[in-house]
Image 1 (tube, rainbow, N blue to C red):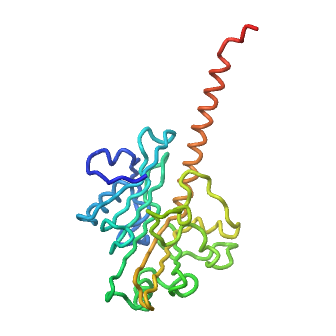
Image 2: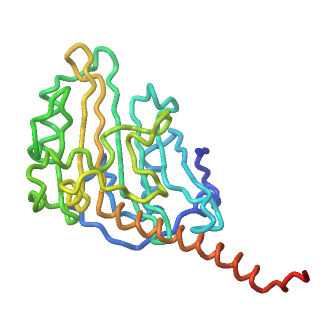
Image 3: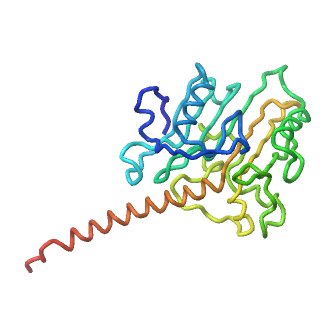
Length: 266
């Protein structure tokens, strides 16, 4: 569910603010980094957006919060499909402090403003370094892998090659408004499923990915994503455990209440 973000205090009710610090070396998208508290991310996005609207996505999860839990902020020019710029920020869920675990930015280039693909790839390499696997092209997403402190990651034991990690985590895609968002993000409240044992070590890394939209052999759109898979995994598992504990607690309460009733007079 999404609604306009309000400046009033009501917008903050779902955030469980953290106080974690983030190394300036961690990869960013337009200055937005993973690991920062939800409050800080909202304030930064509000300043960045200016007059552009921000929307939030939220869920009602009584076992985690008495009030709606905001798990995403979305900024665009108003029409996400045709916006010159769109930014999507994802937060971890309670019971831990809500922090940013994923940031996605998409830029669209108007006719006559398209870019050469080699110029786009060069800019990405300047920011993130050489790709971890195949060189980026229209049909091949750029992929970079980092440790939690922002250093280039070494190949995890047993993975074989970084290309085996590409299916772990969401891809570089703006997913709000998508008719099937499950294709590009984890299910927020279901246990994470192990797709392949050889890929699982990749969940301990920070993933940066990018793709280019081909417009007559020029780049008509660029999408860049950074996702801290380790942070999301830890938070996700804690969330699922808290939801399960709440459900088990309610079931036990029902049984205890039934056990306290008088036996029927037969």
